[in-house]
Amino acid sequence: MSVSDSPARPVVALLHGANLNLLGQREPHIYGTATLADYVAAVRSAAASVGLDIEDFQTNHEGELVDRIQQARGRCAGIIINPGAFTHYAWSIHDALAAFSGPVIEVHISNPNAREPWRHTSVVSPVARGSIMGLGMHGYELAVQAMARLVAAAS
Ligand code: CA2
Image (spheres, rainbow, N blue to C red):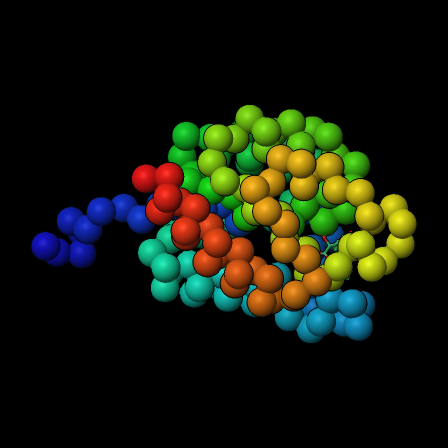
């Protein structure tokens, strides 16, 4: 079988919300020095080793994130999402994720529950299969491993 004959690998959407494009440029004491491109590269590499493809997207606009979640329906096997501050109030993202039938894993670099009280609420957690927070890059790698198991179990 040639490479072009190999079955397509399940695609997982890796979605980032507001201000995460600034990673590595400010607040290294909270978010470290890795850039968003570093995160995406690490996720792609972890995903490749468990047979998943990654489609990544970052936006500072709530509606664009809703559009992207809707576009994942019927196409992506799962969603790994760090919505940034949208996590704490964006019910439109909650509803869009609720309309997605595959597994959703919420990831945060920092631990919002150990920070200001307004970060303690997540409107995404109720529609996520699981949430990983406070583990930086390692949290994303764990999310990929968990996603691989969930996708395999669903197929
Ligand atoms: O810990 C996380 O991953 C967060 O989702 C990051 C969000 C924050 O609003 C959430 O409460 C927790 C913010 C990302 C902003 O990232 C910046 C990085 C560098 C400089 C400025 C902002």
